[in-house]
Amino acid sequence: MDTTTKADEATTQRATKVAVNFGGELRRFAYRPQITVADLRNEAIHAFGIATNPHLLGLFDEQDQELQDAHTLHDAGVRPNDCLVLRPSAVRAG
Image (cartoon, rainbow, N blue to C red):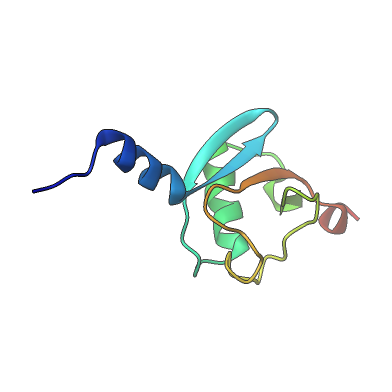
């Protein structure tokens, strides 16, 4: 007998997502610990429809630290349910 409820399924689904905020708009993405920060950044740029200077954007964690593109989400300390911010990178912008 399956005792999984809709609330349990919703909690599990949320737990496997990571949120990205861009200009006050929030989008959720599948949490895949093995992908790189750059992969998630590019996925978010595409999802938000950013066409102007996307190469100048970076992902920042809740402590306002920019995540390194080459790190996996796991190695960068990103966990399910985290909320990241996509905004101009001080490094890329010079």
